[in-house]
Image (cartoon, rainbow, N blue to C red; front, top):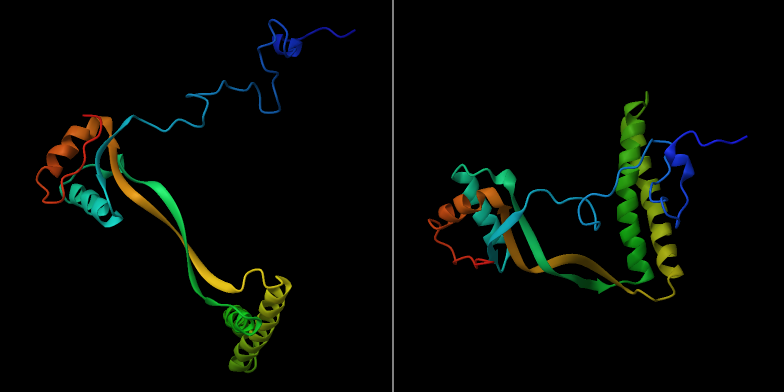
Length: 195
């Protein structure tokens, strides 16, 4: 005979009174907090200024720190993010092999140094062997990996994220103090939001 031992054992989704979630291995689940869109973001904040580049926003926070403002209540937020991929050059199988050889040589040097520490004989030979073997294997793997792409990516590039605007935000309770300090800083006047 099965008798319910607790209210959570009668959980039935979609039925009246079935709103209670069953307990799991860690105990009873807690209801979601906040607006349901993720964890709470902490205390309310105020934007005290928006700047066109990161250097200006960094200068503002540095100025606040120099004037004994509690900067742990401050954040720099980049908005309107853009992914920029800068093409560095053409990539051939030979060049991919050379780049792989360089990477492999560094890894081989590391392994050679580790073996060299425990070598009783010629320490330099162990390090040199690791370097050469790493360079050879790196070249082989680099060339083969590029050849397997079938020419779909014959260039090297570097990616970076850039923001069009940088906002300096402060916890609401410190906003007025931050604005008073920034009034003494000779910088492009911050765009006040919400006024």
